[in-house]
Image (tube, rainbow, N blue to C red; front, side, top):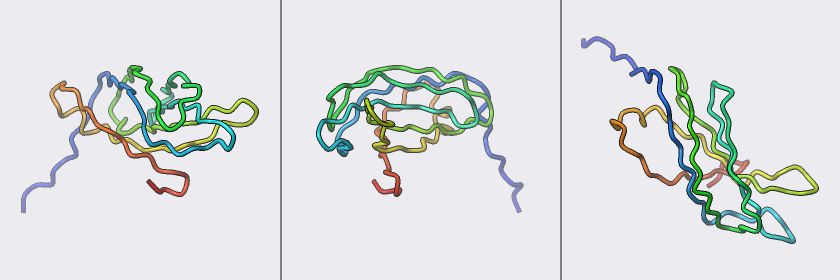
Length: 125
């Protein structure tokens, strides 16, 4: 039998995340358009970021914001949440996704450009 393979260790580094845009966002407000923003929370750490709020963005939003996470061994995913900012009540979650970052460190520093599919509270696309 071959020896068991070890899971590659990620080590340390900086992960640059560019939050560019969102499209086809479901509406969370009855009388007005969504005011979307993104939250990024690195799992296993206290690092978290928010984008600016796009007032009246509705079903689409364009942020073009960059965030830098300090990665240590064991940080393998971050939670991306798209929220609807509300003035008189708590903000609504439009959708969220757990993003696996472990394979991003195997690209030899090349950027990875991809869309992330959000799930609603019932884990539906």
